[in-house]
Length: 501
Image 1 (cartoon, helix red, strand yellow):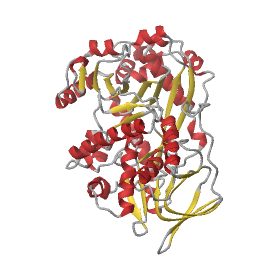
Image 2 (cartoon, one colour; image 1 turned 90 degrees about the vertical axis):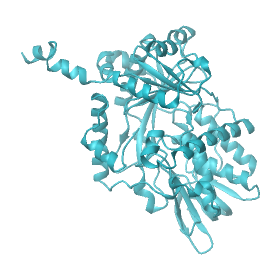
Image 3 (cartoon, rainbow, N blue to C red; image 1 turned 30 degrees about the vertical axis):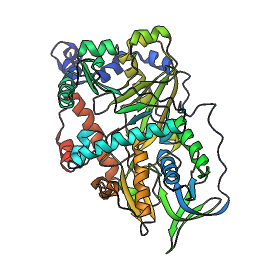
Image 4 (cartoon, one colour; image 1 turned 45 degrees about the vertical axis):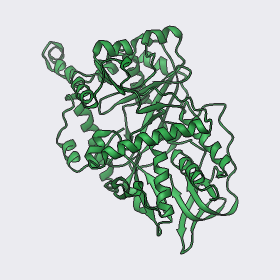
């Protein structure tokens, strides 16, 4: 009797079904055998890094080095800082120290969305820095333009595409959100109007990208470029060397100590003595203890399909090749690669007790199966497609969702962290901020409240794990309740705290 009551119209089961999101329904509707078949044979490693063209590693540091500037970290934040340091002062001696390989962590594992936003979107910027948002929006656009110009100036081959991002509504209540945003942005109703922002109704968005899940879309044509992040990291490292930066890989920094005249970095193979140090370790434990509670590592996951055939591409449209994202709290991001694969990632954001960054966390079979079901529901035309890669990586999340800055030891050490998934573009801006701080010059950047204020720290364990777990559950409930935020999320909003993937 209980089973019958759950299945009849209006019964308990029907109410449960109505509360499930379109993606939760997909998990139940796509056969598990089909999901397993799609994932069979997928390599558990990042697609971008699984490339025979990956450069050979630079040698590890051996012995003692004296330098003007030492940069710790060989991801985007460290690479941009080193490159900009040499552009600003070619005579400055710069040493870059990477614990593993250039771009091996978040910089080589992300979706390749390079955005103009410095604040993780306008809504988040309004929450934290309402008085600065207009200028930060301008600075973000300038930074993206300069980033693209740098790629072109140094002939960095990273599959750059100026396609923008198309945000799509997959639930009925999200259509109004997009319509309101379209009105505020002065969006045009057709992509041929030459506008920076284009609104699509249900029929138009499905003509643009053929998914039965889409109810509306808003295309920001200029706020994002797409690229191959590993190739960008390798290209930046190449340019750094050409400009005179000394790059050492497999050189973890174990300790930092300061004297009246210099900062000493101890590594496994030697010692670096530097007048100034820029720390760009992001999701990994900071060498500055004062900032360790300001970030937590949250794991994000992605899948990569095999290259689509001409017929498969024709079936889904997507001829303008925009980056795609939906509007849920647990959102997906997806895009086409240069060889017409689909990268599909996001949704789950996983925090491990104690904030540990470990290799075993880079694989999450439950999430891989969930993402596979979601992609097949998004594009049922692609049923039967296989995935070639499945991977994860740690994001350095802070409580305000965008980068913060710290100085120590009399201004001789600067750090940047907390990019929360927006580091592909924002790290270049952060590099300039750190150099301004280390050079002791007052600029418009250093005067920003964004730079002068730090976010609230996370509490120590077990409170951090408990708070993040409660927040993830509350975000899922809000998605099921047409975006309505419950008491826990409203409290976090009031405290200007939060959590995102």
